[in-house]
Image (cartoon, rainbow, N blue to C red; front, side):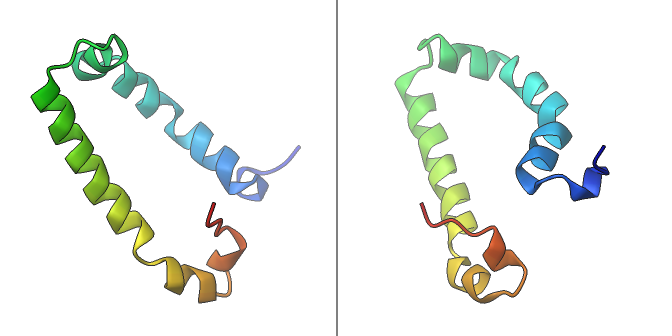
Length: 77
């Protein structure tokens, strides 16, 4: 049996966020989204917010690539 800290990061993240994902997926917002019943203005705002989040996450890519530990999990795909 592996200790939690020995598990791959992807599994640690999946297991560590499982309950929060379940809760998020059951909000009224996400039910509207999955049912394609979200007003277009709400959907546009959602996309703008996602763009900001992903831009912030992707901006330190050069730093991650050169970091001795983080470069092991960097995947530009």
